[in-house]
Image 1 (cartoon, rainbow, N blue to C red):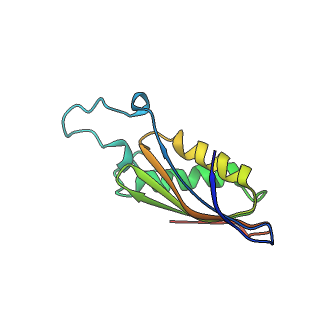
Image 2 (cartoon, rainbow, N blue to C red):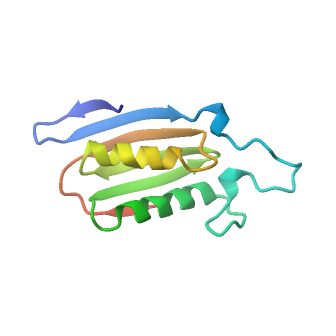
Length: 126
């Protein structure tokens, strides 16, 4: 699922990938300009310019709690999400990608130089 760009002798991997949502998963029913675009909806349904990133961060924190080791930075560019940072396992990164892609409003997800390295402390940053 993910492409490894670099692997060092210590079990560390550098991963980069791009995912696209299917057109059927887009929210296209905008009744004029009175509705908030899905990428701008905040945690409580309010307008938030970085609402999509904030909702994904909240989903990541709910999913991982303190049981997994990750240091992930979530950035938003329109309806595209960019993930960077470190994770302890490739499987965790796959799960985070699936969670982000299942979030309403995501049209594209970029995994940009995520390092898979055991024993990283958890930190999810905007």
